[in-house]
Structures are given as structure tokens and as C-alpha cells.
Image (cartoon, rainbow, N blue to C red; front, side):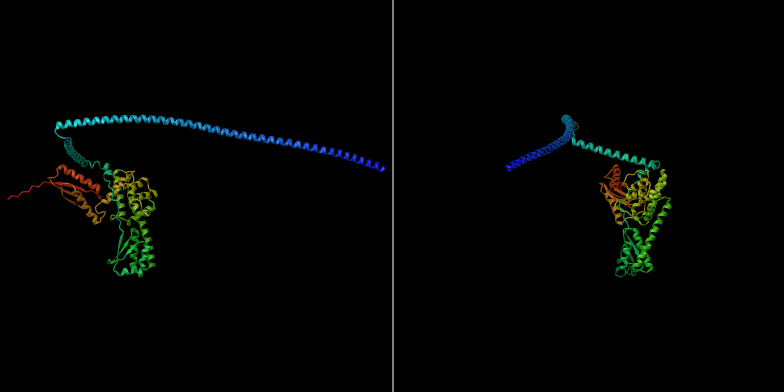
Length: 509
């Protein structure tokens, strides 16, 4: 019984202990749950606040984007409106221009129709007038026209020749008084542009034995000489002569002097040839410079660039139509000075321009341009005055003359070249010029004989007395002179004399 009571008490105590433990555990669990709930509420509130802040930020950003898009759209709408206004304005302008064009076209068409009607009326009136004139005169329109043309032609020829004769007589009477006024305009002539250069120098030797020594063993000497001088040496069957061929006259002169020293010395071999050529080259260069200095001093020209002085000295070895270029330049300079003094111009500038006018012919630069233009470029390069440069470049009328010195240089250049004996011509060219003169005169009707006299400076033309009148002979002389001037190139002037004579011959028996 006691055991049962103890067991019941133990069970009851166990139940009470379990209940107490459950109550204690429930109390603690409720605290933890309450704490967790509070923390969850706190986290929830924080998350809600963050979400609201992020939403507000996103909303502001979206509003800004929308605002910017609205602004861009508004601007585009404004631009489109402006463009539309411009297009409307242009369309209106085009429409007005089209209307004006249509009005003008209509006016032109109306005027053209009126002109056509007037032209038709004039043609009808002209035909009626011609018919009336034909009835009154008894001649057709073509016959009357021919008679009128012939009459007017004869009158015009007579009046023209009378005017020409009067003008020439007046010019002869007043030539001395008006010389200073017309000298610049009347004396100008352009020399021929094509220049004939001497490309060959003949070196004379005592005997043909020297030719073998110059050639050397297997041609070594002559090859060394050609390589050192840049000149082609021609050794042929010509007795006692060797030909030096080159376009550069300075090189030909160096080769000639070198050959002269080698032949005199007798020692001819490649090493000696190179030594002699180098020595002669230096001597020639010094002589060129000395010649240029002496020329400028003789002419009273100072302050010229050394390179121009060297080129002036180089003129000594250049020729044009057989005329030495340096002598031609000096002669032109003196003529320019004399002419400038007569005209009251700057004598020093004129002499300087005359000396430099052909400087382009001896330039070391590229020769693909005319020598006058090249000379002007050289003068500009080495500090010459603009009027002198222009005179050099314009003496063949390849550029515009900008100073009074330019025509003086042109005239003096032509005078120096046209002086009798200044230049030589090839015989064939000389004969051809005489034949051309006679053929030009013979091509005219009524001419029976022609004679070219005084080396082609005078042409006498014989015409038939029964074929031409006195007035027609004057006209013929003028026509021949004009044609010769247009078709031929010649130095100086040519006198054309037309002779018309009647001979009566009878015999007394």
C-alpha cells in the first residue's frame, strides 16, 4: 500500500515537475518569440523605409528622364515648325519666280511674234522697192549690186592709197622732230626664237701620227679624255684634224686646251690626261670669272652678284647665229645706254638690263623654259631690280612690258642682231630666203619679173604696163610688203620697189 502511495506521489510529483517545466519553457519561448517578432517588425520597417526611398529616387529619375524627353521633343517640334515655315516661304518664292518666268516667257513670245510680223512686212516692202528700182533703172538687182561694188572698191582703193601716201609723206617730213616719241614704238622687232648653236670644234694637228697617240692602246687615251671632259671626240679620215663634239661650249674649250697641252707635252696617258683636264678646267673657270669682272668694270656696272658675273664671263664661249654672245651683250648694253640717254631715262639701269638680257642662254639650270624667262628668274634670284628683271624677261615679248626700259632692250637686241655682218647664216637658208622673196612677188597677177638685191634687203618687182595702173602698183607694193612681214623672218628691213614702165622702140632706116 505504501508502495502504491509512493508511486502515486512520485507520479504526481513528476506531473507537477513536468507542468512547472512546461510553464517555465513556455515563458522563455514566448519571450524569444516576442523578441524575434519585434526584430522582424524593425527589419520590416527598415525595409519599407528603404523601399520608399528607392521608389522616390527612381520616381525622381524617371521624372527627369521624362522631362528631358519632353524638352527634346519640344525642341524638335520647334525646329520642324521653323523648317516648315522656311519651306513654305521658299515654295512661295519659287511660285512667284515661276509666275514671273511665265510672264516673261509670254512677253518674249509676243515680242518674237511681233518681230516676225515686222520682218515679213520689211521683206515685202524691200521686194517691192527692188522691183520698182529694177523697173526704173532697167537693171536687175544683181547687176546693180555688182556695179555698185566695183565702183565702191575702186574708190576705196584710191582713197586708201592716197591716205597711205599722205601719211607716209607726213611721217617723212616730221620724222626728225618726232623721233624721240616714236622710237620706242617703231624700232621694235623680235629676233628669231630659234638659235643655232655651234656644237663642233675642230682641233688641228701636225700629222696623222698624233691621232694614234691620242687614241692610245686599245683606245684607252681617248676614252679617258672623253670621260674627263664630257666631250665626244671624233677621229676619222679627215687629214690633220680631230673633231670635238658637244653642246656645252665650255666643255669643248676645256677639251681643246687639254688636247693642245697634251700634244705639246707629248706625254699622253690616262693619268696625265686627268691631271691636265683638271688643271685646264680650273684655268677656264678662273678666266670666266675674270672675263665677267672685266666686262662689268668696262661698262661701269657695280654691285652685281658674283654668280651673275660668272655667267657673264661664260657668255664668251657661247654664240648665237655665229655672233659671240658676250660681244652681243656688250653691244646691246651700249646701245641701250645711248638710247636711254637720248630719251632722258636712267642710263645705268638701261646698260645693266642690256648686258643681262641674254643671261638665260648660259644658265646652269634646267633649260626647258625660254631663255628670256629663265634670265628673268635668275635676275630675281640674285637681287636685281624689278624693272631690270622685267626688261630681261620681256625682250622677246614672252611677258608683259612693265617699264620703259623693256622696249629699249628689245629694240637694241634686234638692232645688234640685224647689224650687217653681225650674224652669219647657213648658205641654204640664205638662198631659200631669196627664193621665198621672189616667189611671194611672182604670185601676184601682173608681175613679170622679180629681183632680190643687196643680200635680200631690197626686192624689185617689174609689172606689165598694160596689166596694172599707177594706183594699182602702189597697192601691190603695200600688199607685198605686208605679206613678207607676216610670212617671213629676217633681220632689219626689206625695201620693195615696184616698177611700171612703157617702152616705145622704133628704128630709123
